[in-house]
Amino acid sequence: MNNDVIVDLKEVSRIYTMGEIEVHALRGVSLRIKRGSAIGVMGPSGSGKTTLLNLIGALDRPTHGSVVLDGVDITNMDEGELTKIRRNKISYVFQFFNLLPVLSAYENVELPLLIGGVDEDARKDRVDHLLSLVGLTERADHRPDELSGGEQQRVAIARALAKPPGTTSSVVVLADEPTGDLDYNTGKEILDILVSLTKGEGGTLITVTHDPEVGEKMDHVYRMRDGLIENP
Image (tube, rainbow, N blue to C red; front, side, top):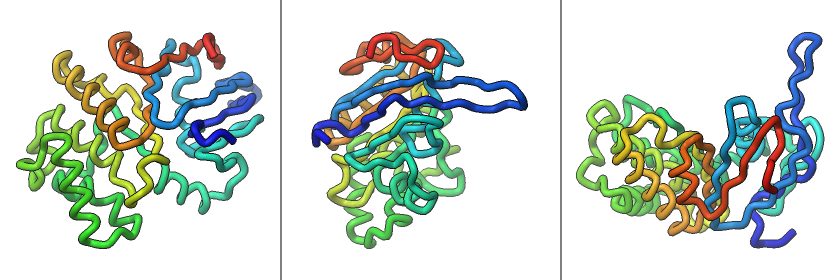
């Protein structure tokens, strides 16, 4: 596989069974995403966007086809192997931030590194660096309920890039409507931070959105309808 390609989906279908009814969420999607790019996925509700994100993020498995992430076929991996993939290579940024309310901004960003077994000095260097990049050094000790919505989303972006040293170029950040719960100006600011920080740190960004202005910030936008990509 080309080392420039970080995500490679080949003829991927996902069928959910609801009683006697089959729901075809994806219908033979093939997609290749270059390392270090920022990609948007747009489409109406029910078009398959979230299913696509979940397959790339190793949260779901295809019914047919294959999913290759950073050169590794994850289609038939067992749950233990998928857990390692998610820990080292996948990060999510959600619309509603999903920070742990009992932890400070610093501790929320540190948590993935702690789980990943990164030593204390390296953790501190990485967390301090990421909080500085998102402009929250002075807010490091504040819990989520003491931060504005925009500040919480900046913490979430920093946390998304808190991976073991030397692995950032293999990280895929999956953002699901990351500006949907923010006002216009804050959302614009957060989007700029998300794109510039992810790409600046060597990661790859895939954003699901309904907002055309989000799409304008991406390197390329794929449009989905009825489980298919209309402009592969």
